[in-house]
Image (cartoon, rainbow, N blue to C red):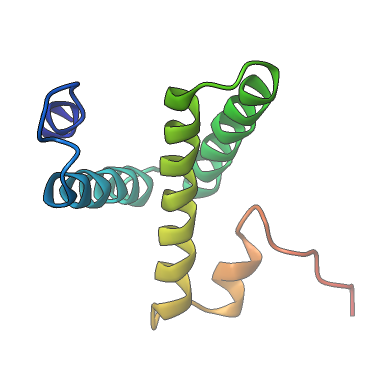
Length: 108
């Protein structure tokens, strides 16, 4: 997290593309690593959704650039998680059925 925080300080030059790309990639890695090491991945994913929902509610009440940036980063994490699951050879019907956003399957 130290490197991520350093890349996101209010200093001239850190807005340049190489630093923004490094920051975005590091943010995705931090979140993927955290989720992959969680004992209960569904619970961790749900907490990430709750945090996003809270930020969206807060943004609706009082928009700010900092909050918009945070929401954007959180959405990137969900996009990364979705892309990773869809491209993973280990993704299966049973794995997808355990994700919090899956549609319930009708009883047979």
